[in-house]
Amino acid sequence: MPEGPELALAGRYINEACGGLVFSGGAERSAVGRGPEVPFRSEAYRLGAAARGKELRLRLEPLGPGSPQALVFRFGMSGGFRLRPAASPPRHAHLRFLTRESPPRALCFVDARRFGSWRLGDAWQPGRGPCVLSEYQAFRENVLKNLDDKAFDKPICEALLNQKYFNGIGNYLRAEILYRLKIPPFEKARTVLEALKQQEQERRKKNSSLPPSKKLKLKRDNPDLLELCHTVPMEVVAAEKNLLDPDHADNHTAFKNWLQCYGVPGMSSLRDHNGRTIWFQGEPGPMVPGGQKSRKKRAGPKADPDAPTAQVTTRASKRRSRRAENPTTSAVKKEEEEEEEAVPDPPRRGRARARRAAAAAPASLKPEAPVKATRRRASARKGAGAAPAV
Image (cartoon, rainbow, N blue to C red; front, side, top):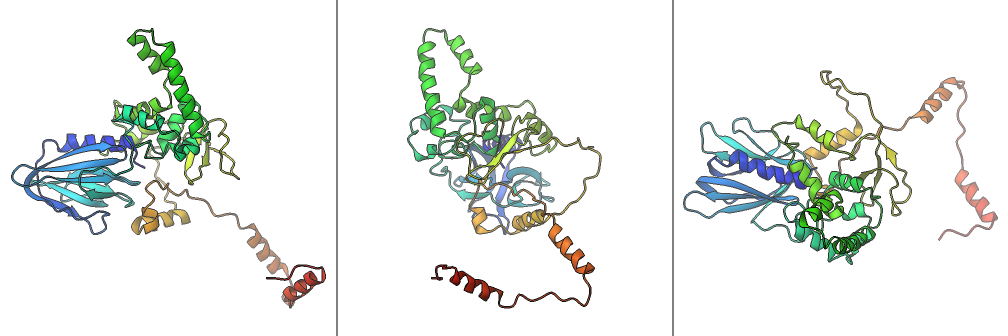
């Protein structure tokens, strides 16, 4: 699911791929796109993008008369942009902007699962905090000055998904950040962050006499949780090989190799109180939801990259396919909803035994019907002094 780095890279992709292009006409919306019609038309205009947390703003600037138009996108679970020939757009392209060249190309907002959306205007969504990538200092201050908020009564793994304070952090980033600091995911958020605040004050006193270069080195060598909320996403954005380039799907392998915790064999996982999977190593912490045992991911055999992939259809995958084609309103409202895991059907040993017993029984024998069994049990309960039904 797209998180802060994916949105930042999408903005960079648009600016680099479309920076020298001139677009013409209006925006073409699909019938199932989750956003309004765009009331904009121009004979010649340019596109520019900027990302903030989990939102991306696209700006259409006319080269002649006319007013500019801005749109703000949320990518949901599978959204992104692609520049393709207009004659062969990608599947699930829900909004298209056509270039003026011949033959034309189209910048497409592509979203297979249709949880993504857009709205008109250039305002960021109210209630979202400063971006962990582009507004680090404001993000840090926003967290530390609001530690009395009830959001920090929750486990740290759940607080990290609160976009009011951690705008841009998602499921894989929270796992990587907590893993690097060896913080149990179900430790209380306020406990973790108040200790951080105290450590920061002590560090300032201790390092006050050091030259700036040594202060910077100490800070870089001993990052705290809020610093990693900035530097870990930046590793993805600043990678020498674009880990999330939409034109190079093979880079997903490089991204998986970059991950140290999320979905990695040997790591444990649990569901948090919102039903989302958190990956970790070691003890989970005191606020684990009741009735759960952590599961460890086992390392499987390496697959032959040239071998054909078997097509397996499970009930869960069929349900996912139907939801992708026709998502329900309640599901769409959950931008943070996680992909459902395919669970195999339980073994049907009881049914097999029953069939074998029925086959072995003589044909003349008929099972006795439990006549008035319920009435006899009820009368027995009354005789034993049971309370009457109310």
